[in-house]
Amino acid sequence: MTYEELIKRLDPAVYQSLKRSIELGKWPDGRKLTAQQREISLEAVIYYENLHGIPEQERVGYLDRGSKAGTACDPSVQRGQAGSNNVDPGQFVEVKS
Image (cartoon, rainbow, N blue to C red; front, side, top):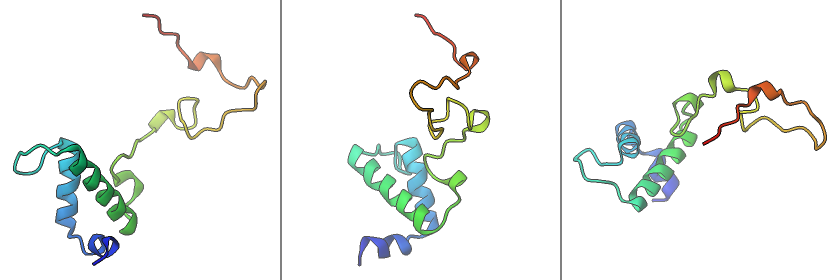
C-alpha cells in the first residue's frame, strides 16, 4: 500500500484525532508527541486535507487575516517597486523597548 492509498483510506475520525493531537501536542491517551511524530502527523493531516478537498478555512495552519487582509501586514500583498512610496505611514507604529 502506498502513502497516497493509506491517506485515501484514512478514516475521518482518525484524521480528526491526528489533528487534535497536533494541536495539543499529545496523543489521546496523554502521552506527549515526539518531534518526529508531530512532523509525520502534520504531513499526513495536510496531505489528507489536500486530497479530500477540505475547505481552506478548516485546514490545519489556516490564518484568518480578517481586517488585515490586503494591508501591508498581509504577507500575500506584493510590495511596490523600489523608489515608489505608496505605503501609508499611518499603518505602522514604532515600538521602542
